[in-house]
Image (cartoon, rainbow, N blue to C red; front, side, top):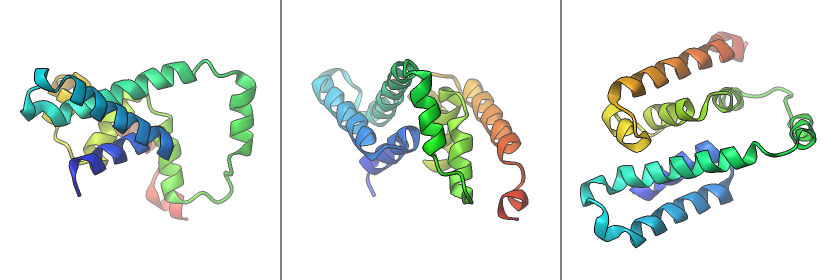
Length: 151
């Protein structure tokens, strides 16, 4: 597995759309290529993740302009019958603020340390820890215990 796989997984977890995730990754690599002379080689990886994160934030802001009717229609068309644990987790992740969601995905799904996450998201380590702590508390509240999900 290479770095682009991790970047794609991160983008896919954020967007939940394969095409949009691929677009985000491609855009990130294109931006790095254009600015490759100005980028420190040791920081390329965190730079790529930051581009994907920021592009996702921009996309989310634009997406919030969607009309209420289309949001309601999407919710009504979403199949909530017998969701499995991963669906429950994805629903819980979707309820998190963007910064918390990105921090938790980078830590728990991609395995980055707090310092690397801070570089990617433009935060210091203390802020990263706070975002992850708050995200996990919200996830715990939303999901409840594993026994409740399985039982």
